[in-house]
Image 1 (cartoon, rainbow, N blue to C red):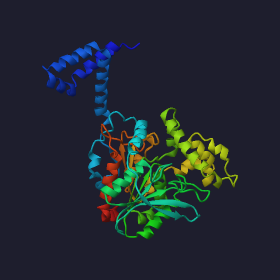
Image 2: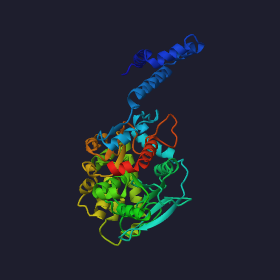
Image 3: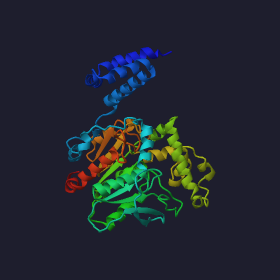
Image 4: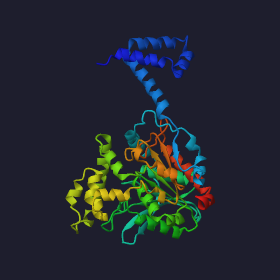
Length: 426
């Protein structure tokens, strides 16, 4: 059994010489408050333990949690030089003191961002070659400027233009950078119902390719930057690896946020018992519900066993029973291998910054392709020790704009103010 008295005494002795407490003691020596404080501690061991534990946690937080991000990029390149000048790369990332645990970061960041006001978009319904439709939500422009920078945003697995993290990025790009934004709502998302029995997946970037071509046809003189978040980042990443130099002719730059590079390892991580599995089941339920809403599109064929699809409890089960059948893969393992970006980022020829937290439950830190980024002249990965999945909350009382928004803002400004440099050398 733990001897709490001895434990508290040990903590008090350990903290006694810490500079923070020494300074505090020097400031209050001789004051009545110190005597009262000591009396409270002596008479209330629970309070003593709580105070000691709080100081201990804070010291751990300052010593091990707060740290500068790491930029993984080939040194000596123009792209590295451009990114190394970003102020945020040299700053410490200070996760919210009471909430640096990755699953809490992931969930509470969403709650805080939900307080952001809704954005009024102008909806463009775009019909792709196979007859399917997607919604392109544009920010309104008072004066049409055909050369104004455009930021194309791809949401996550079940996201849309109204997702809280998308609204946050739209506000930053529009208000801080002065760019026009357009959000690509995947098939069946953003309030637009499916028009054909086809959805979307991480390994297929056909719809994205058509949309980028469409935007460049409409605005040939406007610089275009694409940012993909979570699943949207995997789709964007596969577009970049598939199209290579062709993508370079369309996009000035790209950004990936909380992207899973190794879909095998990401799926395994989400299947760990506890909060990871709860997140997994929540997303699987969202996917199942989205298919239930349009099940009439899939009832005319025996390709799917819809009852089996609707009983899916995890993302892997849903992908095995539905996604693989939709896109012609023989197994879920084959699908995940096709979607996997790890080992392919050297094929990216567009200046691309990726932001990842090493504790992301969707992307284990040990499967981030650090070596690939360090060998690439076009890809850089900025990693923080903490931050969760699309979390990155910071500050004791977090505002609605987080560390990821500040990285996004500084990167956009650097890209759009150095367009000629990027086009010529990166």
